[in-house]
Length: 139
Image (cartoon, rainbow, N blue to C red):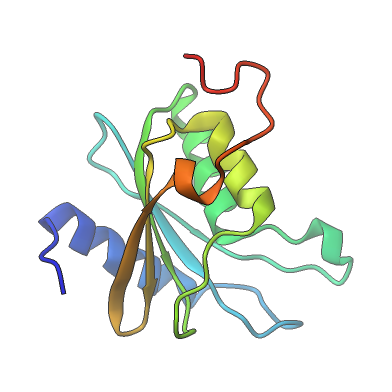
């Protein structure tokens, strides 16, 4: 198992903690996320919030991204940790990957974790090789 920085370990603990706040009465699949922004010490947590009208459900990853935008405006995400209780850990859904493509660079790090710890590190460009983007990562 790789050794992770104290920031990544802290992000894992935050994602694991906020996972307990998930509102998941329909799927019973709780997800927590912690987003690290470049130049910011504060880690932004997010959890999934389901709705009886399933289309209104918002995943933990998008909640963390959107909270970061609401708090800081323009953001430069460095990495995200996603914690589920599945084995192997669940990757982000297509909606979340597309939301990440809006704000993150192709080299954005996505750490997949479960309650036993971080299991895998991936890059956004590998998870979503051809995003819908008006500039298609030309920035």
